[in-house]
Every structure is written in structure tokens, then in C-alpha cells.
Amino acid sequence: MSIFQGAARGDQHLPSGVVVASFETYDQAQAAIAKVSGAEAELKGLAIVGNDLKLVERITGKLTWGKVALAGAMRGLGFGAFIGLVYMLLVPEAIASVLLFPLLGLAFGILLGVVTHSMTRRKRDYASVQQVLAARYDVVAPQQSAGRAMHIIGQRGGAAASSEPVVAEQPSPQQPPSPPVA
Image 1 (spheres, rainbow, N blue to C red):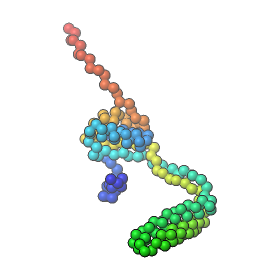
Image 2 (cartoon, rainbow, N blue to C red):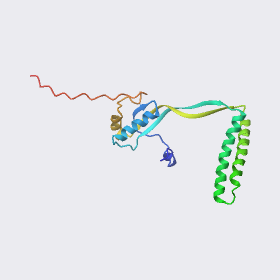
Image 3 (tube, one colour):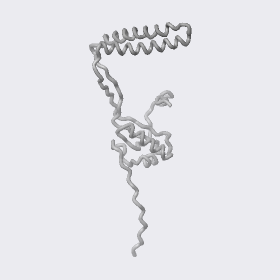
Image 4 (tube, one colour):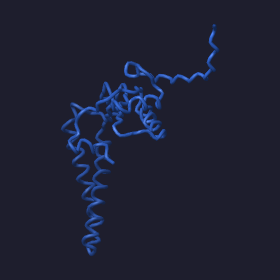
């Protein structure tokens, strides 16, 4: 199942319901959903909502002409080898193309990498990776199943206000009723 399946059907609204728990990490929110699933409770309608999204770009190093050419060569070589193998499957008598396509891919990869880097060199001469992170992850449940989900996860009222999971209260042992005093 795709994470974009709902968006493909036009389901582009935030989930409605009650915030039954809040966590600092996505893994904690997933563990809470797994806990609900393990208790054989209804999962339909549960959602994990990331709040306070931030784009984080981590710099991995400086780009040099050599690194750019090598990266382009590897991409081009891989693409050329793929095209060569596909061509060989379609035209089995053209065995020489298996060697020709990777070499052409290598050359075009280097050329494309160097040209692209020369166009952006003044603005961006470093390599980086980007990711989107949330400061808090809320588990949202429909109104009719929120109480059970909250009980299973172990968080009581105020879950939305706190970013730390609330520890479930341990039930006190039942004491027998005391006799009435006359």
C-alpha cells in the first residue's frame, strides 16, 4: 500500500477526531499504533499527524570538479548499462551495443554533470541531503474509538498539550467494601 494512496483518491484533508497521544518521534507514534493493533482494537480512522514541520538540509561536503565528474560518470555508466541490456534483449544479434551504450552513458554523464555544476557553481558548491521533520507526532482517532485507543496506548487527558507520553496509571487493587458504621 502506498503512502500516497489517499492523496491519489482526492483525500486531501486533515484527519478529524481526537488527539489520543502525542510523541516526540515518529517511531514512538508507530509503536502506539502497533499497540492498538496488538490489542485487536479498530484501526480504521487512526492517523499519525506530524506537527510543526521543518525542512532540514544537512551539508555532506564540498563539491569539486572531480567529485562532480565521478558522480556523473557513475550515473551515466549505470544508465548506459541498463539501456545496453534492454537493447540486447530486444536485438540479440547486437552484442557490441552492450559495450557501446555504457561507454556513451559514461561520456554523457560526465558532460552533463560538469555542465550542470558549472551553471550552479557560484550559488551552490556543496553537496547536501534534505529531509522534512516534525517537532511532534499526534495519534488522532475518530470520536467513537478515541477512548479505547487512549486506554490501550496508555495516555489520559492532556495528551495534545504535552509532547511527552503520559505514563498510564496503574489500577489500584480492589479493596473489599468496609462495613457500614452505625
